Length: 109
Image (cartoon, rainbow, N blue to C red; front, side):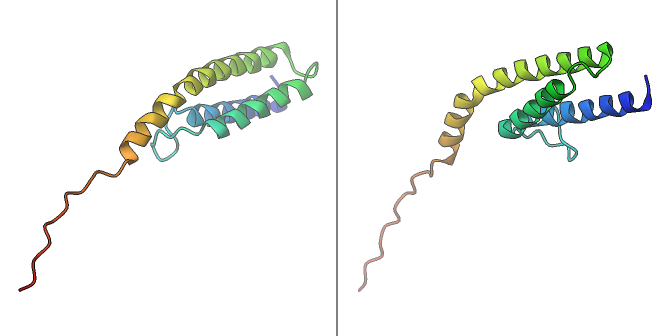
C-alpha cells in the first residue's frame, strides 16, 4: 500500500470515528457520549461522496473498507434514528417544570 493509500485510509477512519461519535456509539475526545445525528448524517454523506468520486480509482482493498464502513454507519444511523422519538419524549418529561406549592400569604395586621 503506497503513502496516498495509507493517507486515504486514515481519512476514512477519521470520518468513521466522527460519525460514530455523532451516533453516540463512542465517546468524544473529552470522554463524553454525545449524540448528534445531523453531524453523523453529514459525515456519512461525505463518505458516500468520496466513494462516488473515487470510483474506479481506488485499490479493491480500500473500496471494500469504504463499503464496509458505509454499511456499518448507515445501519447504526437507522438504529439511532428509530430511537429519537423515545428520547424526545423522555426529554420533554424531564423539562416539564414541577408545580410549586403556593405559599400561604401573610395577612397584614
